Structure formats: structure tokens, C-alpha cells
Image 1 (cartoon, one colour):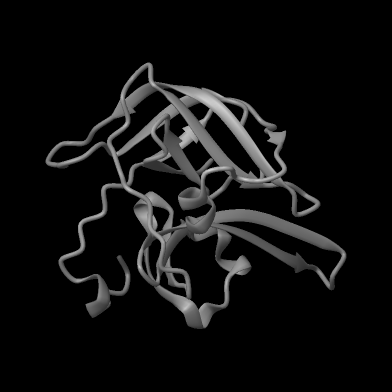
Image 2 (cartoon, one colour):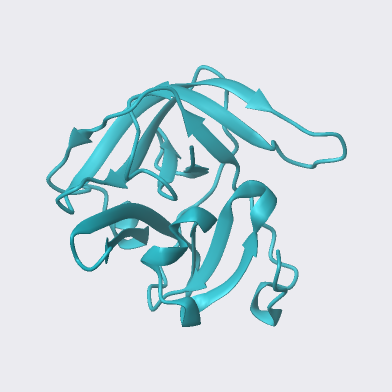
Length: 173
């Protein structure tokens, strides 16, 4: 992380960064699982004098702390940013929310669900299957994984969950 806040000292993050295979997502009306709904954070901002907009997502990972992608920085108040992990495109920030999801490791062949935001601030959902897990030398957890699914623009920084509703990754790319 570029900043090393005391609030994260000794905090072990089991997140992996993931990418997706195609580019859309299906509209959803609500997140039906209350714990997932409480941890999901939609991100939206108007850019270029209110003409264009940008969407992304984030998820609470600990009481008062959420994560999204660094490339979503314009969707956040810079005063809330705790730090970044540039090599994984992760940005940690403060949030008033306290509900964090349980975490798990991704499993090849497992079904996953990703959440994101559409152009009209609509909730999007994408279902897929973990198809590849990449590790790095000296790492204690996977560096990233890919899943075959229909997540695209607006899913950046959003949670990827296993079938039990546990957080297995953060969408990017």
C-alpha cells in the first residue's frame, strides 16, 4: 500500500483480484441476501461538467473500511482514501458502513456472482465460473483469478462472491 494506516496494521486481506471474460451484465432489482446488500457500495460520479458519468462498485471488508479499484479514484472523496495497492489496482477507503462479508479462496470450476453498477445507476449482476487462478512466487494467496462471465463496465471494484455469498475477489479489467 502506498499509505500504511495504523487501522490496517496487521490486517490480513484474503482478497484476490479478478478479471472477466466478456462485457455486459444483467439488470437486477435488488441484492436479496441482506449481508451482501449491506456490504455492497455502488459508486457513481458525473465527469466532464456533468455530461458524462462513470460507475463502479466497492465492498466493505472490515468495519469502516471498504475496497475498490484505484482506477475508480474519481468516484470517491479523496479525504476518505486510506491507501492503495497499485500493483493490484486496489484502493482502500473509509466508509460509515460496518457490515463486512466473510471471505474464501476462489476454486477452479466454482460458480461465482459479481455485482456492479450500470450507466443509469442500476444494479447489475453477472454469473460465471472460475476458470484460472494465478499465483506468484513467494505469495501466500493467489495473485488473481479469471472467471468466464458477462461482467464489464461498471463492475470495476465490485465484489465477486462464491455460491455461499463469501467474498472471493474484487473485479478489475
